[in-house]
Length: 378
Image (cartoon, rainbow, N blue to C red):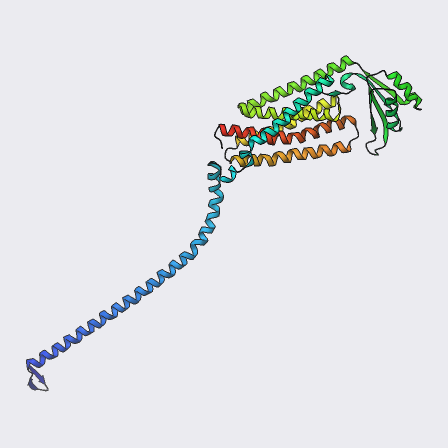
């Protein structure tokens, strides 16, 4: 190989040239290796950075998931899960309800009230030839009204001394409470009583007498009883048409019958005489009784989307509110009024509403439990 340098020619051996080429190749290989190692380092660093980013993202995801679950779970529970539980079979708590475990005992208590009332009324009828003590408006007789402020005990002592069978009551002013008159009701001759009253210093002008014939009173009493019986029968028919089931209808009828008979038995035990106003009060009591019984039966049989125990509890809250509100109002009215007719109505309603609490929530509810078990509604 010849190299021209400034016009001179030099000759270089081939060995030297080969060595130089080898050195250059080695340098190029080293540079390539160094580049590869740098690329590998860069790739490792990039991989480490990606791993760190992935770990950070996973940590953020783990912290955000519980918050999302807490936000989403209540909505899911409130909307779907309760409905699914209510459509399924009752839970263990429902199985521990007193209505599902002791319904036979509750029913026996209600039936005991009914049977004891029937026994007492039978004995009372054997003694008095009637199921109730009637006043003059139902038996016929005289009603003597005396406009006087004389003490009623004086007149009662006079009647007892002369063996006169009569009842007395005092009429008072509604606002002042002062005595206005005294009323005497009797089936005996009114003339002899008037003579005795004159001996006590009472003027003839202050005495008024009203007479009701026994035939008219008995006919009026029979009509009232017919009205009560017809109302009871039609009530039973309407209940059967509404529910179209034998046992629920029977439960409503038994509850209403218990209210009427038990109330009458208590009134007879108290010695209260019943007049035409009392019969009207029994009709009102029948309406109160049927109202709560139909409400209970409708809630239990129609609201199938709820658990059985929850149906009874919801009806219990509504029914107790209705009955207790009416009972308190009627009892306060009984304490405030002075009219004997109004007192009789409010007394009958107070007693009947108190009995309705037992007949409805012990008897009717227990019969509905038996019906539900037969129909596999629990």
